[in-house]
Amino acid sequence: MQRVTISLDDALLSAIDERVDTHGYQGRSEAIRDLLRAGLQEEDVADPQATCVATLSYVYDHGTRELSKRLNNAFHEHHDLTLSTLHVHLDHGKCMEVSVLKGAVSEVRELARHVMAERGVRHGSAQIIPLEAVSAED
Image (cartoon, rainbow, N blue to C red; front, top):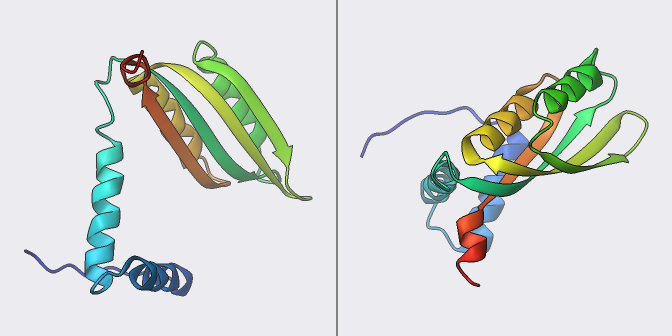
């Protein structure tokens, strides 16, 4: 095992400490290892060429220069993946969008990463569900 040093802001460290308490971890290292494992496993959801359905949810700052235009262009460039989008005005400056996507895992993942990496997107999450997982129960 190797030791690494990371810098965390106070709010993130408080959230980790709360997780340690509520989940019964022995310490921060164990909790952070589990969180990292879970994050890394998300990348291995399915064969990149398999078909999936997904939700892409994100909150963004409406006032960020040209962000709405860049997001709109990204979805137009991937129009074949988008089934539906819900747009919600959270307050004067923040919006939330939830998009339902369907397509190859690799393409859905690429669109989700692109959107969440845009400057002005504050929070983002993609839930990818391989269609073989859905049809396996039939």
